[in-house]
Image 1 (spheres, one colour):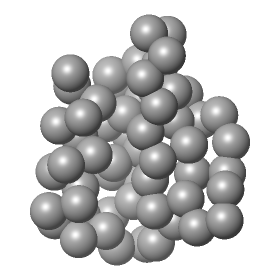
Image 2 (cartoon, helix red, strand yellow):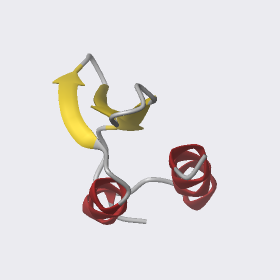
Image 3 (cartoon, rainbow, N blue to C red):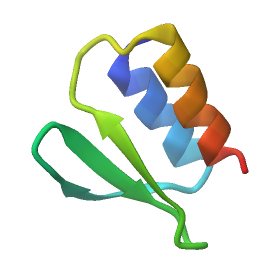
Image 4 (tube, rainbow, N blue to C red):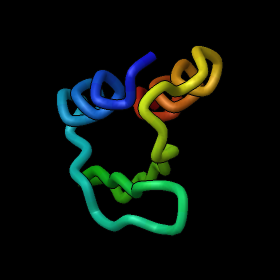
Length: 57
């Protein structure tokens, strides 16, 4: 899955970009849930599913 597609989904769920670390970017929503997204163009399907699953909690 493309990284930008994951970012679009996170933004739809109310997450905003907060900070960038070494190899990951940090997104956070108004509830205080933080999610880190690897900084790769292509993210493995299982990793992408896990990120979106965590965001939908």
